[in-house]
Length: 458
Image (cartoon, rainbow, N blue to C red):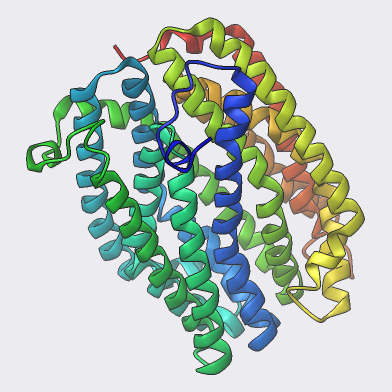
């Protein structure tokens, strides 16, 4: 494969399915790992140079930040599905309009989020009973991230468009550049200038702005595939409607998941700073453990989208089996590695042995769940790529609202004691593991029912 071919859009309607999926997923996996480094490096730097409370502050802010990004999740998902199906069907005009509409709607949502964030951040932190010792850090961290949210928004939307066209390598390269910038600025702002939590927030904002500009330049050079003129940037009613129909379920899913995380975060806060900090470490390690699952899920979405657009349903079924088996195999290896070497990773965040021991104890509860998530992400990716974004949404809502959150509080209630007045911290992770496993079972049932096959765009 030549360098030019490596950076060119990939036609996933031809060739061996599993090879196409793996070759597409590998750059995405590397990219997802790099993106996870944003938050991880933030946590490591503040944990090492500021302290465990600063680490807890960065982690406590994450669920709120994710909640305020749901509009971008919806646009990114919808855009990726539309682009992959129109590209697979060879429809240049519809492809051009969908890309232009996505770019304009992202700009509108960016302004809305920036204005909203100035009003809601502090009240949300207070409602969640964020400890006084970390609330100011949480406030400043969130404010800076959300004032500069445009960079993150446009990287995710433009990167999603590139992946929908089958180009997962360009988005990877631009993200790697941004990750290096983020790491360098983290160390400079915090370790040298002493800017604390605000420093890591500024580093993230600047790095993500760079990645979004690079993605835009790449798209502007792809005029042989689509047009991106002023008239394409004017939102088209048909494309806007499709974008909402395809993206809204994913946006709502992210919103509900984030709200659930906020509710659970309130429970976490009740256990004190040590458990909050442990939860941050676990979620950072968890982020890396989940990367292959998300990468295969996104690869399956593009594979499904292009082949559904080309009416190759036989190929979709073949690729779904092969891709899911590979994803499960990779997650099994990761699960074993976490169980054997997880504590080594956790010492990167803190020098406190008690914190590492607590984090590793909780991680052992979750570990097997990554195999279940591999199944969920792969089969959900197939359904989303075909245009059925509602089914994965309902499954996520059921497992989160009806299972995870109530179960976490129920276990905490029944495990209260004199030494644990708010219950056992394990309740958060037992409930999460349960929801992951049930989610895999429900997803398999709906995938094999096959209703997703009738959801393609005309």
